[in-house]
Length: 93
Image (cartoon, rainbow, N blue to C red):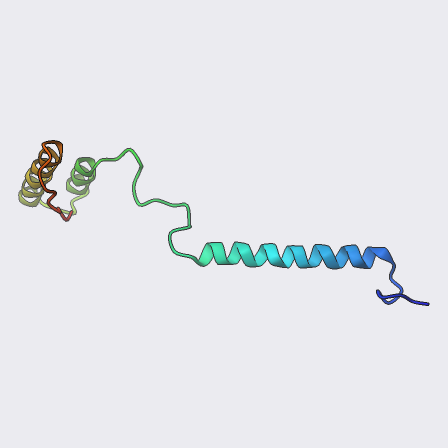
């Protein structure tokens, strides 16, 4: 009698288990890669503050001196306000 695996023996059952586990792993990996925010990449260094980002934008020529001064003043005023318990102001960089 040939059995359930078409005469291929017990290794066919093991191959089937490995195949399905591999396929399941591939699906989990693909879903993880497709979900937003799971790429592991960040847009800035974790230790980079908002002021450092603003300074870098000035250095790279993304903003001019006038914009840099205005945004830096607003940012520093917001940070001081947070320390004193005032309401937060949103600053767009």
